[in-house]
Length: 265
Image 1 (tube, rainbow, N blue to C red):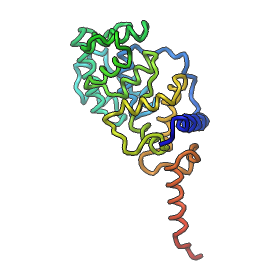
Image 2 (image 1 turned 90 degrees about the vertical axis):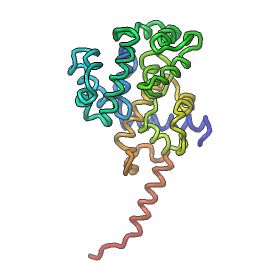
Image 3 (image 1 turned 120 degrees about the horizontal axis):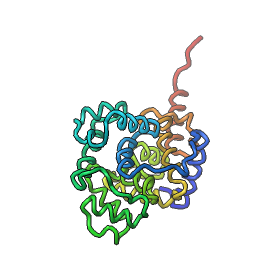
Image 4 (image 1 turned 30 degrees about the horizontal axis):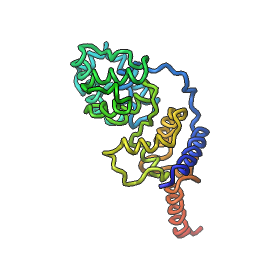
């Protein structure tokens, strides 16, 4: 794996190249969603791109009267609204589970105004709603770790909420993003996905907070459009010169083509 300085340089070059390939709207200054909505949106966003998650989230809000109706709906009913997102049934179960857990703790769907009062207050509120203790004295990092133990909320969702609603520095990593980073050689091919927090921490060390939102979006678009799981479009990749996997795959393809007998005219 490249040293930290090399990874910083590599990812900076990759981000610059991807920004040219996938122009993004201005993201700074966007009004964050309320924390609960951002958490549910994160469940829609994992493994997808923003346009797909935006559409699914809006369908979710328009198809049901309120969060309580979603809470008492069946997994199948919620999944039908989320489709064509992949694993719609699994996502629906997580959303219903989150809403049920919040409702049981507060008999409402208000998680307070923690996103407006800073990270210390956020940790205090999280402690209340997720049955943790003294998180306000341990900071947001420990708070995020505790939220991650909530069975419907994984590391991606925690990092997404920290990045988008709480103003902290976090880089959400889902399967497609990890795939791109592995092919670039930034993340080991045999990483332990059970310890995703450690992998994420390493990426956060080399991606400045100011570029975190853009990095997340660009990685997802790259995974969706170019660096697909099967048959990646390496020859059309804007970061081919930086990607050892892409260079290897294109070389193999070239060798294979060169070895084919030419058709007689």
